[in-house]
Length: 270
Image 1 (cartoon, rainbow, N blue to C red):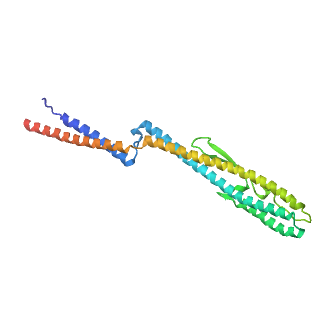
Image 2 (cartoon, rainbow, N blue to C red):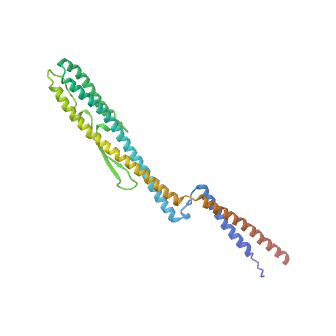
Image 3 (cartoon, rainbow, N blue to C red):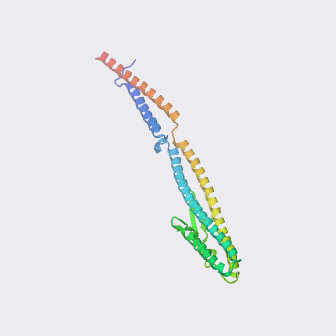
């Protein structure tokens, strides 16, 4: 057997010890963070993919919030229109009653009519969302409902105040029932306007709910795909850590043995 000044066995053991120490540190970092990829150098391709996925997931989450915001606005509009519908039905019933009343009775009925018309106008003004009077008419509102560019829907809400409904100054008084009959006709037209406006709101709301559901599914699928690429497999990584710790112990033992052999040779020489 040849002897040299350099302790090659010790150097080899030390090199392997450093390698196992590095592997242990990496495994402990992965297990501590829960991620297989903690920096770009861990997996360049995987890092690029997960960063793109994260960007899209964040966009989808914001798009869902936008759609939820729109759905809430539409629900508020529908609720306000429901209240106005009740008042319009009450007004029509009063107009039908007034058509069969005496002139004096119609004067009393007119007071009730005026109060209901005023209440409809108040409801149209008081129904707000983010301080916007949504029943006064929203001409156009663009809602971004995707994670990319140009993924928008456009909604609009027709006005249902007394001017739009054509019932400002609604009258049922008079010696004959002519005004009461005209009031019935005006209220039929007002109800038709309200029905069209509320149907439009309902269609927008149904679409918003479908969009929210689709966005939630897209988020779930994207997060699952990112998780498979980015997150650590705890069972596999724990096995790798245990293996590295065993190899580290073996390398330490071999390093000690190599150094011992070198000392023994030194004693023989000197």
